Image (cartoon, rainbow, N blue to C red; front, side):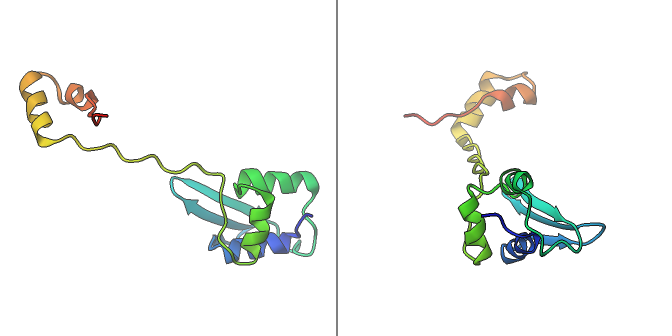
Length: 122
C-alpha cells in the first residue's frame, strides 16, 4: 500500500525531521554521519505517491530499512534506518607505546608517527 504525500509529511513531522519551506517543503534529519530527507510539493497532500516514486522516497531519500518502518514511524513509533552504524573511534595508544615510538622513530615526521596504529592484543 502506498501512502499519500500528506502521510509522508506526517511521517517526517512525527519522526522529528527539520522542515524548511520554499518552492517545495523540505524535510531533513541527520542520523549519525548520514542524513535522511525528502521534498514534498505544495498542494499534493491528498495525492497517492506514485509507485516508482514511492520506492525512491522510501529507500533512497528517507533511507528506511523497509516499508513497514514507514508505517511504524507514521504511528509515532521508533523506526530503523538503512544507514550503517558509525565506526568505533580508534583506541588511543597507551602512554608507554607513545614514548617507545617517539624514541624509536626519533627524527621521523609527525605524519609517520601518526600512521603507526595501535591494535589491542587478542
